[in-house]
Amino acid sequence: MKKISTYLFVASVGLLSLTSCSGDDNTPTTEPQPTNHLLGQWKLNTMSVTSYENGEVVSQNIDTPVGSQITWEYDFKADNKVDYYMSIPVAGVEEKGSGTYTRTGNTLTMTIDDEAQSFEISKSDADNLHLKMTEEEVDGDITYKDEVEQKFIRK
Image 1: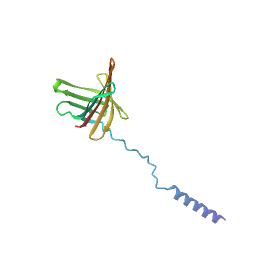
Image 2: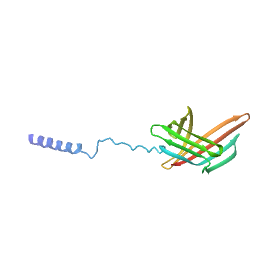
Image 3: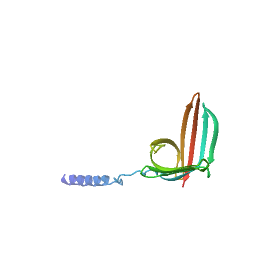
Image 4: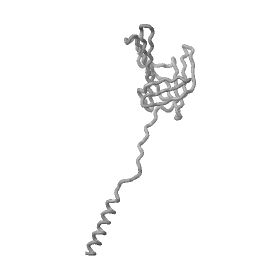
């Protein structure tokens, strides 16, 4: 009887040692962090503008190359700071400065000179950053609305 108990004990220990050793690694796995394509320098390449009066399209320009007519650049930093440069030589306008930005999902909010402006990020990859915004104004009986999409390329 003692011999059977010893065999059962040895068999049990053997089975337990086999089942307790598995190929599972208990090291926690870390999910790869998505690449923040926003970081870096961007230069405006094309713009689309659709203008409305009382809901009707009055003008539309799609993917118009800006060429040398407009220079618009952003440099997004990892510390949520952004530098910008904008120049419209024909109008004699040139402006540069710094501000901050936050990104929540597909909404990018930049605050420059204590003024916040939000954009919808319609595309963000290693080479392209597309920002959409809508402005609306009411003047008497007329509602004016502009939908603008700026398409930046990596600088």
